[in-house]
Image (cartoon, rainbow, N blue to C red; front, top):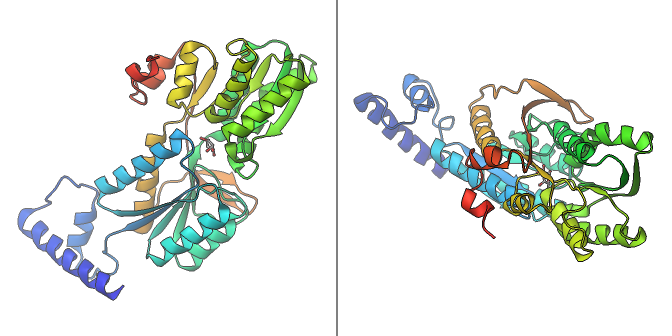
Length: 357
Ligand code: GAL
């Protein structure tokens, strides 16, 4: 630690003399050079390079690969350090990885929990070490969280439910939810229920299976869908799949019965494979959540928090302990009618990739 403080002090002295003689040098207009150079009183420890810890639950879905890459890139651009750990869907592993990040001297922790409840004690450890925590994409339940940064996840579920009700009037449905350890799964289901429940209550929909998909695993979704088809002699007319990975599993089971493309099915995440299925007609919809924006917003908020500034979280989401200051980004439904506009024109996916066989 002492050594790094000394190095930081030397670096600061360098920055100060550069900015004194050359004005504000590089294109880094984030204000850091101003605050570094303006105060004779600022301590070297305070001005050391900001270090962010990032703890991710998985790289199973394409989106988490993007989140990681975006945050690494954004940190690099902002000139801050980032240390990344991936927990491979193991809460105990995530906890010990975070302990490791804490011991590396991070200033802020960005945590996307594998297990919303188990992660409470992980957050408490960071707080005990004086480290502020951003719950990234997924909320941590039952403890104090500094900022929650995500999408409007109830809205995501609403988009899925709305699409299904617009594409299936009556019939037997399979209603799958995300992993029980993920608070997002609860929110998505809540949103979808706003549309599905009235159809169930009126008797238009009969739910022939209602199950969570443990760990969001496509293989688990495949098995559940196979069971639902077998138990109902393939008499299934619609599927609420909570994300693209699980939709992929369900579609595999439908395809084995010659039903792919005949049964409306939802998704979420705008994965390339899902976009391709939408184009070929085997998946009905997905939801676009721009993880590029989320990742950039996380790094921005983390830097502000490290500097003691307000990250601008102007919404509130309750986590059974408190109303957590939140920043929630918008999500959009994507189907074959708007896929080019939303996913390709935005640069999220490449046209040649989506339309290649
Ligand atoms: C959710 C996330 C989704 C989805 C899922 C599986 O928490 O919001 O985008 O991919 O996890 O990782």
